[in-house]
Length: 129
Image (tube, rainbow, N blue to C red; front, top):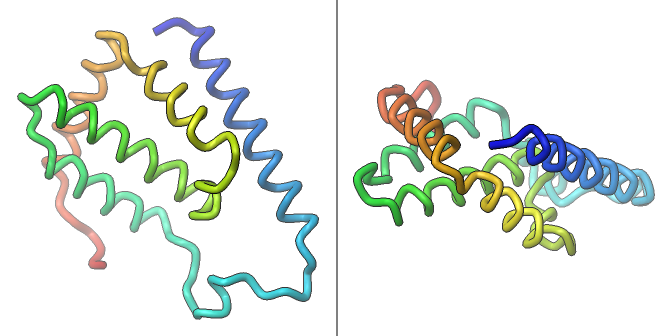
């Protein structure tokens, strides 16, 4: 994977993060968020780890289709954890998912992802759902 792809991906994520933050600042302050109305707290990093371990454990590493699906599910989980569930409604959601998936389509990135899946399969759950 070339450095150009990483810098392009990083700049795209930074631009999206800035867009989300600007939209959050424009939201009226008096309006409580849906998460605070329901008493839910934003997801913690431990919850993300549990999700990623669950995704890794469900994937058959000998099946390339399942590995690709696991990669897509992990990307989605990380993006939603970072930006919130409402990010799925952002107009750049699908293009970002497609771009990140294609950026990880080379053999070296796939080998690293397989090592990540193997490492996550060996992890024990630290938190319960």
